[in-house]
Length: 126
Image (tube, rainbow, N blue to C red; front, side, top):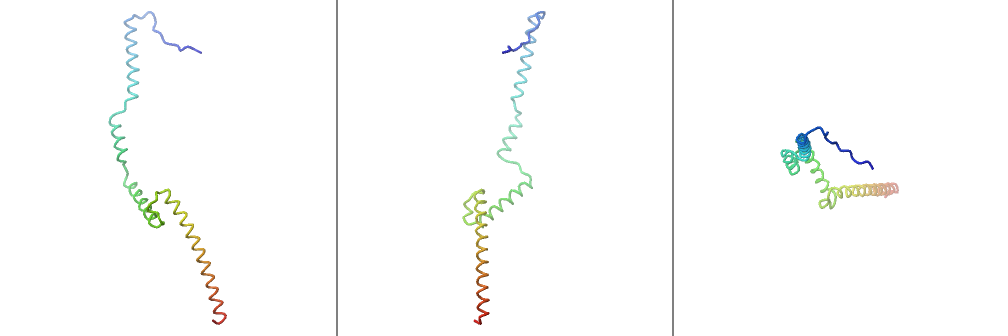
């Protein structure tokens, strides 16, 4: 393993100069560390305000309201939808649509069956 190389001050500098240089280096590195850690107070306050009270534009607020209105409408249409969260509501909606499609198919079959019975009945003179 290589040992880390440290910069040394030349022996021609006086001890007073060495002390001044070392103090200056220490202060500049300390300042850099502090400035990296410190977040401006205004930014902290703005983040807290934004977290607690999200800022929406009028368009975003209108879109959000429209989506919520549509979800409420869907909850009122789907049986048992009022008590469901959005994910479950969408699952129930898909199931409900499939069931309605099957019912329509069955009713069409019944309708055509009764139409054919009526047709036979009228042809037989009855």
